[in-house]
Image (cartoon, rainbow over all chains, first blue to last red; front, side):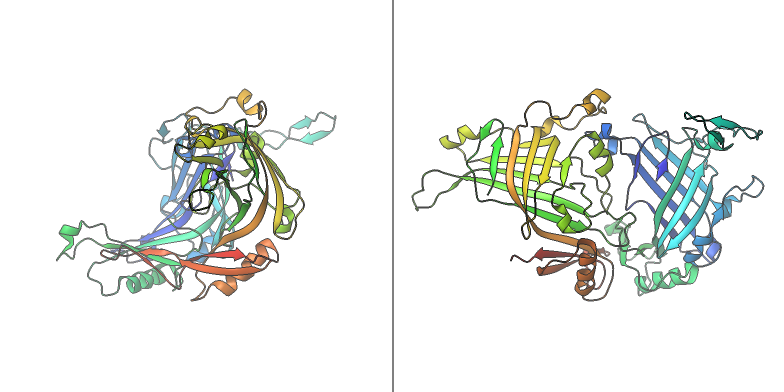
Length: 248
Length: 257
């Protein structure tokens, strides 16, 4: 569920997932490029006659984080919430690329520079991770801490005001709590390997302790056919799908 | 039996019945939503037999409603369901399918008329052939076996007028079904068949699929099933090939009493 600009949003299945990419020169689990991709489209009824690709859209990619341990399962312990600027390590906690398409034009707040965010995994069930993420709007400063404020509701009762309410209810605040599947692992495999699938599975097992039996395996060869003959340069891309639901 | 009233014309009734299809996503699907679709072909035969003694088809009305937005606990609970496709219904029931697909036109109608047939002139215009209903109502009656009496009122517009660039205004959203409906149907909807998406579960996914189907929909008899393995991408020359033992889509047909 995405809270943003007081609009209803719906998750695009399939493209929203946790994924990892193992390059051919990866030598250590820290070399693995992890990313969490989330894509949302406005679900308000007023858009029902507009083709969905032309509706307001929010795309968020959290790149470059590392699981606390070698195994993909250890992502369930990822908790990078309320870190100070000094604690934030972009090479461990990741950075966000945000793309908004709200008025018919795409823009990236932050000018294409990765944004920091608070994020953590609340729980894991099988291959589904419940992820919580919040992103400060550009230039927004949370209000300074003040004394407890008392609010009087319509029926006359008194309630304590939550000092974080202003921050949470800022219309441009991005707050996400979502069940996200793991996912897809893409392994770059040298072209002259005898068994690309076995090679890819072994690499995934070595670096992220991925299961031996992916749900589905696709091999992509992006080399142009006329140039591929006799060449050993240009890797194959073996995509291991570890989740029974998505087909990207 | 099917009774149809189309664009102000009452069509001859037919023996056609609507079919209800169910799609069950993989149990691994986050926020898995079971989708119900309804499909009806209402055919019209010529009043006079042809040279071979048989009556030939001269017109057809094809209705296809995807994702009725129903969340019955079991298939029995389709009884008494009432769908009113207003702005609130669209907001609540619109969701991407398991593979990132979104159906924008939920209620589609297509017509077919035999060329140069004077009898079809009384059934409505031959053009356009494709229509879309934005506002519609569906009422399911009390279940009899696998059959639900069904009544449909819809306000259709030509398909070409459906898609637009700008969102609808609050005033447009607030209106529902202005004037009498230009499509009215009374028919019987039969729980016909369905599909379930299965994760990798061995060479025969059917035993597990059967358990999951009944867990999702409640008990009913299944006449037959077929398994379609998902295709995997391989380098040329075998670009796409079926992968037995991997993911599958299992189709099943409800047993007729």
